[in-house]
Length: 418
Ligand code: HAM
Image (cartoon, rainbow, N blue to C red; front, side):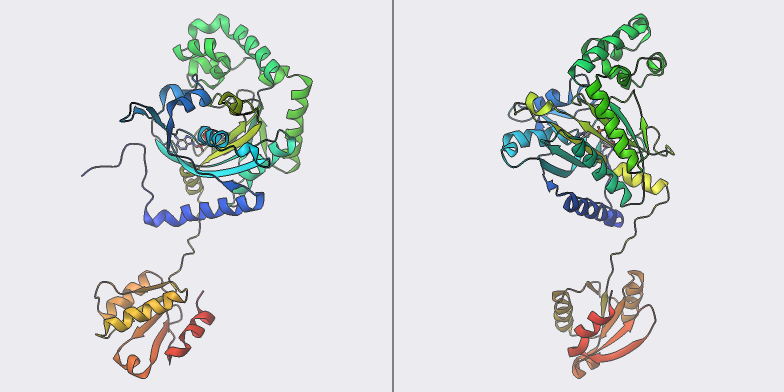
């Protein structure tokens, strides 16, 4: 037997309704906020991710599924959704249309990570990107879109936020951080040595216990923001607090991708049922479009991991109700198979959800099966019913049974089935 690749999951039929509910929730939110769907390929030129996600991020340096295709092109399975959307935005001139350009997607992502609960090699993200706006309103709207998604399933995670600042703030902070780290650098991991040179902020994201201990007392990026950045960050905090959203300022939050510019955030569950893993995350990235060859365009967005979200709901005992229903089971006790097949089709054509016997079961077994699949009504068709132009119909929850004219059936079902 060939097994599923490590770090991947089948979506089994018993769980498909959960994914359908998630898509439905996403579509309702998209409609409310006027987000348009975008879909980009599962793989892109490797260059796209190296240039956008950053060559100091773990995702690019360690986790990408990269290979040469038969034409010797370096191809990478997308590790995240943003880079492909930005490529498409530029390539298709979406910025020439009316702005803001508000997009969403549900996409698979591939990262060669050490699999564990909530950490997969193939996961799916609901993502949103708002192009063209650099306002407080667009920051808040982005956070509220993600928050509405969580709330529609009854959860209200805490948002951890940080503000990386404008170029001047970032440059100043980089120098302060390097100064702080310099005396301890010899005790830090190899990755942090590299980060020290290429992207010092990334040291704050280091998972090594030694590095974390050293960086515990590092200066915070928000300690020394310019007045403009400080006021932007204060405004965001004030607004989200006003909406009753729990937030925590986390000065060590730099995110795992290099493209972020100022506001960054992660949605975290307070009970840590998923360890330190975020339920969703995002931020503003005002330079990426330009660095990939487009016009300077401010953008903000987020990504929410769907498998991780489902695991979280499960571990919290929150169930997604399965309200798919088999309205009618057609049981047959006649040899006239053609009649039954046509009868079933006529009910489906009227829009009812109908099941019937495909397995040549006995009438008794057909009833047992109808019970098992929770059919609301069972219609029995035998030779008598065919001759009388009637059907026997049984309400499976009350046990009541009656014979009605076949010509009255649709009206009857419309009145009774849910
Ligand atoms: P990210 O933080 O790398 O950001 O991923 C976003 C979310 O995807 C995470 O918070 C988590 O829920 C889920 N996720 C990430 N990796 C895995 C994994 N290995 N297994 C399961 N779930 C995972 C991004 O990807 C950015 N593109 C988000 C963004 C959009 N920022 C701006 N726009």
